[in-house]
Amino acid sequence: MRKSLKRRDILVAAAALLATPAFAEPRQGRPAPDFRAVTLDGRRLSLSSLRGKVVLLNFWASWCGPCRGEMPALDAFYKARRGRGLEIVAISQDAPAQDATVRALAQNLSFPVALERNAAYGGYGDIYALPTSFVIDRSGVLRLDGARHPVIFDVYKLDQVISPLLSLPVSPVAKALPDVL
Image (cartoon, rainbow, N blue to C red; front, side, top):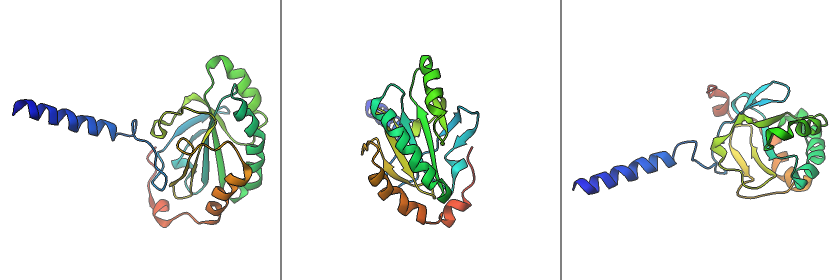
């Protein structure tokens, strides 16, 4: 009896550990995990601070050809839609030795860029492929999980996901939620 109790305790503990935010994977249609980032210009951003906006959370690196290729198009997309409530936050996965390159590339972008070491996004799981983007609606619900459904930037496809979200108001429930950070 004692052995099975220990095994049961271990299984319960393992299940609880896997259910914690650090190990949880985001799911489309459910509330998106919060993230925090200090941008290159020193602003502190989080999903909760962007409540009411449609957020595209983008993971990229300066050494990633497809990432560098999508940045100008992503910037143009942002400029055309930021007035309607779109926010893009780009988190660079570069090593510290590439900081100068990241900063040079970020100077040409209209949206905020942060370095991975100045960001907390554990609830989004491991980012294995770059670029990877997540789209979160005005109410904080994950609408596109780029880790599960990789999309190399395509304005038409992204517009199909984001434009309808920009037309929707934030839900009354999301307005009432307190900031957790």
